[in-house]
Length: 204
Length: 204
DNA sequence: CGTCGATCTGACCAGATGGTCAAGAATGAG
DNA sequence: CTCATTCTTGACCATCTGGTCAGATCGACG
Image (tube, rainbow over all chains, first blue to last red; front, side, top):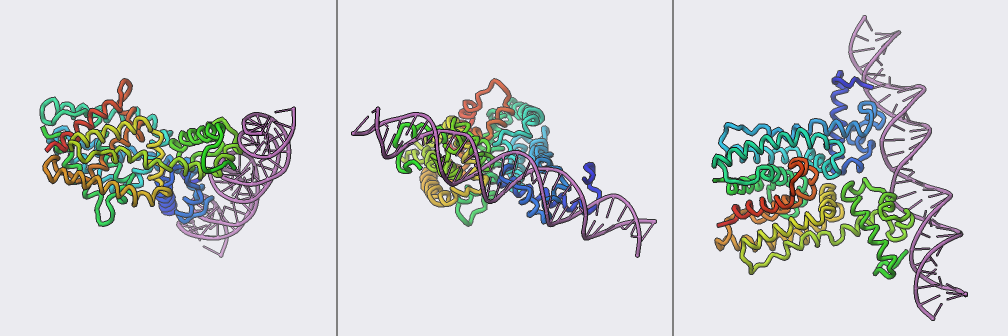
């Protein structure tokens, strides 16, 4: 079994990365149960026993992918600046989150699968880290609203609405493209639409 | 094999319904691959061979569930009245769609699973029936906007945003409750929030 | 070149899963 | 009550899947 602490050799770095990449591709579109180690191995260009040489189990691969995903996902919310202009801060947050969906659709779908399944791995984090960050940011937004710098709206639902809308363009990409038809750039149009929507909602 | 055309006997009606109900429960929270016929049988209070007496395969059960789901899902959009007051019509649509999410969360999740997986069964319908209905309704909304009875906004993205937001409260229920904490009624709050949001967005 | 640890693989195993089948049990029309 | 039809099931099968293992191969380094 290779050292768990750090990647020692170049081969380890390359193969672990290949496995994680193939697994992300597979898990994000088929869900945990819909993926076999053989398929991951094939995607990574390795044999099944070789995959299990780098990770002790299918479960461990999945866990490695989920690990740190929440951090990536919440970074844009964390980056909201309490000292910035309220409306700009929120619109910038929306833009950053949408960009995340555009750049990391597989991660977005992995997350969606996990929540849909009852979040067997994320459950503790949801009620802890996630709820805490949202409470903090909701308080910030509520403060802005109390000062009259933003129009009033439920801050928790405001934040969740941003998640829902930005995730949608990644998770339901297929449906979005089916509805829009060819010749559209869903993410670009979504950026304009969301900017307009939140601007009108929140302008005092 | 029982007659495929119609439910003949009371036993057939009861057992087919029990199977579909157990299957919906299972598929909606675990996805197609995450469900075994044994589990469906257990949920329905039948033996595995007995389940396969009513449906020829696991696939057939899944198909039966998906069949007609899109109709249920699009009914509220279809019900939009071209002769009504534009803003009222859209707000009523939002409310109806949210209510659908609240009353049929399992169906919502089943749909989400299907799209996430690449819609192996719904794909043809998405590009056909769905796109056609949306195009029709988008034109209606665009007409209202052109008459100045609604503020301008991309009609396709408007409709999709309503889907995204209402689905979110069903599909990500776990996350929503984790964020809000106890003592909240997510759907009631969402109703108020969404009404406010779309009212501000669309009021001319 | 020789050695030793890192990397890789074919063969294999136990358990789970979708599905079949022949025969038994229940049902209901006459 | 009779008997054909409907319903139910235990036993079974082929296949797939996660995971193991002994040993083969590779590659860096003395």
